[in-house]
Image (cartoon, rainbow, N blue to C red; front, side):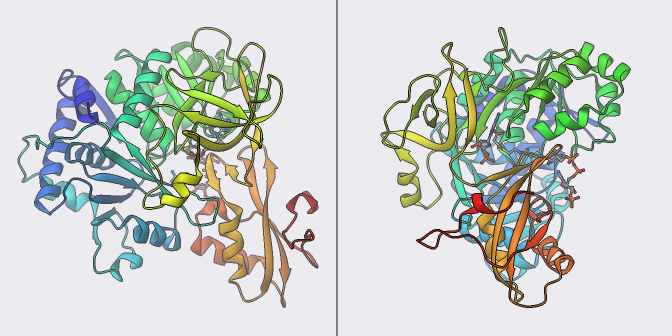
Length: 485
Ligand code: MLC
Ligand code: AMP
């Protein structure tokens, strides 16, 4: 089966039911089906064929959902781009994915210099689609067809496109719908960005499979969160830990009311501190269910829906997911000892886009190497204990220090730079930079240039000047020896 077959459980079977609320408008599943059919016919008329890529640079909106469903129906590969990315970051994805077009609400100079990529405004697209047939295009696709190419911030500084197939998304959503008991009776509030797999793979696909009513927010705004919850009365909510920290600011009476309507709060994408889980439980009367995933693998482990949701732990491997916890020599580690997580299952991606070498290096004996470290308790609960790479996760957004270091080193005042993580109560981690200056150095100036060229969450919160960076005998920077802030 492909995803269209699964989506039809809602698009066709629940045609008349309310499906989506966005910005004071409500759409039924039937309306969404027709909107995406028209869009698919328009894309086909513009020459899009199975396997072509379409980049989408949008914050959450109905058009983004229409585009995804249209791509699924056509077999076009959907390539979401983080709306916080700036031209420098977008340019890399465009060059790598070679899309036929990019859908963007703003004009991009990167695109105007490339003759082969068209930039299309989403409002123009929707207006043009209205003139096309609402008949579904019939494109035969099996489950191994790629559905999306999602760029991960690669450890080497440049990001790689993870190829996620129809089967990957289907296996993931079927697991979550079953294990978290999601049904058409749920009311789902989605405030996470659809350009990442948390909202796309889990949010959109579980909603489509279960056929529940979803209210989509353009983004999570902590000042408005309480009102949104109270007005919509959701039963289901997915968040990153930063969102749960923000929700702790809600007044106790409101929090209790929100808690009474709610069935399930899920957290993932970054570690949820046990302290936050406890504070949240006291305020809302709910134990957040923590799960662990990755762009390349979608969801891997989850605490149980029925049974103990253990603070600090990510629970057990989901159905169909095989996990190996291995030491550096690839030997299994005993319970209680730290090993690296290797995974196999129908959720694991098909490889990195046009990077055979990187793909083969990412697997060992058929298992995907995650770079995440974990321990297993005697009763089978897994707890993540760190990462092998120096990845920083800030508010659920990934930052690879190397990318920021490369940018800083391009600045004429800077000889060398090392970017590391500093703890932050709200965002979990934030990046800070140690720099060796060549000449007079104004941190505010450098910060402005970073803001101009990099996504806001990558901008170092502090620039600390040092005489030199600590290095080992081989010349490698020893970040652990930098003074911690
Ligand atoms: C954040 N910002 C946004 C934005 N989200 N801007 C536009 N659109 C969005 N969707 C910017 C703000 O402008 C601001 O920039 C900064 O980020 C922080 O904003 P804030 O208002 O202070 O937000 P805050 O309350 O801190 O919450 C931030 C957040 C955001 C939680 C809403 O970090 C977020 O959406 N995180 C989710 C990321 C995610 O979905 N990750 C999943 C990856 S998949 P400035 O300039 O002030 O800094 C994955 C696999 C898995 O990891 O397991 O799921
Ligand atoms: P991404 O590349 O954006 O998909 O981020 C994936 C990474 O997020 C994983 O490799 C983990 O390091 C981290 N992650 C996801 N969920 C959790 C969690 N529940 N606890 C700790 N880390 C997590």
